[in-house]
Amino acid sequence: MKGIILVGGEGTRLRPLTCNTPKPMVPVLNRPFLEHMIEHLSSHGIDDIILTLCYLPDHIQSHFGDGSKFGVKLTYIVEESPLGTAGAVKNIEDMLDDPIFVFNGDIFTELDLTEMLSLHYKRGAKVTIALTPVNDPTIYGLVETDRDGRVRRFIEKPSWDAVTTNMINAGSYILEREVLEYIPPSSYFTFERGLFPGLLKMGEAVYGYPSNTYWIDIGTPERYMKLHHDLMLGGAFREGVRDKLNIHPTAEINGPVALGKDCVIGPGVLIMGPTVIGDGCRIEEGSVIEGAILWRNVHIGNRVVLKNCIIADNTIAGDGCGIDDGSIIGENVIIGNGNKLARGIRVWPEKRLEAETISF
Ligand code: GDD
Ligand code: MG
Image (cartoon, rainbow, N blue to C red; front, side):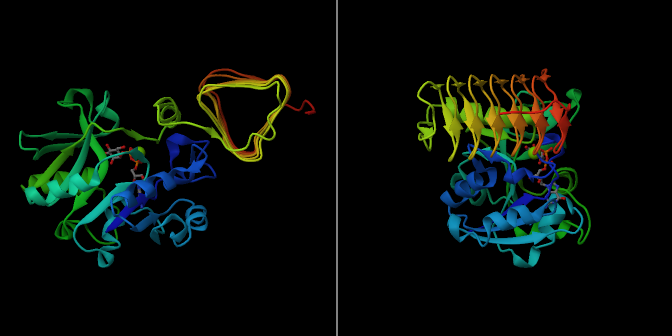
């Protein structure tokens, strides 16, 4: 079956992580997020996948190629300027047959797409929207349904006074090709503010498919971090250490830790899970890491303390640094010796924090 993944967004809320890396390439447990998503789709027989790209498309294309390494066929469509979620699908109308599966490209979920499709047919729906319960519907698309599951209202990013349910659009749709007629060609148009409210007004058969399965949108640093914690503390995560060769005998690793290839862990280092350390990282003597996500080739000096922070590729933290809860450091940053970054600080790529010489 065919599926479309919408991956054209700029990932602004994940900055600085997405300054040089498109959201789908952000690593989750040391693999690009999109690899996890493609695996999920292909496990439900969706193995002919069209990626609609706009922001940093080359990064995605060069990693995934024709998809054969990942057991799927991939086709790339690059938008010159963003067409919006629905415009992106209209743009490739000629390539599509019924039913059309469409996915937001930033959702980690175990949604049962096979069951969703059979319900779509059973109800004779024109559109089926997957639904998931959340605590705060105001940051998503609120979807109100009646007893039969038919959608009554769709309000994107509602204010609290408009909140009548905790069920939201989970970002997976099945569409019948005929509804694409309502999307204007070659213009910016979205499902959320354009097509869905429009179809409801016309009384078209739009149904919800509610599910309580695991679901998270990785579009903010807090949720990106939460996904890692959920995956690693959820029980399914076992041995994440890929290469024990360079772990010093006096280093201690406690709890779930995913350690990539070619890492060097120095004497007396303490790593507490859930923590992810990407390929090629180097952690020097006496450093303490708790609940952090390190991408590739990160160099942590002596006696550094990292807590619940995210550090992107090739960044260097000098001796005695401290990086606290919720801080996010972009790629190729140099943090001089002894710097203390308090909670929630975001450092943009290539930045140099103070001039003190760094010696390892
Ligand atoms: N090709 C293309 N072109 N893709 C786009 C464009 C575009 O112009 N704009 C956004 N996208 C992609 C993004 O890359 C992302 O994968 C997806 O569409 C959704 O965009 P987000 O920016 O992540 O939207 P959101 O998270 O605020 O809200 C959406 O997702 C929620 C669930 O997480 C909406 O669909 C909400 O209704 C929904 O509840
Ligand atoms: Mg999103």
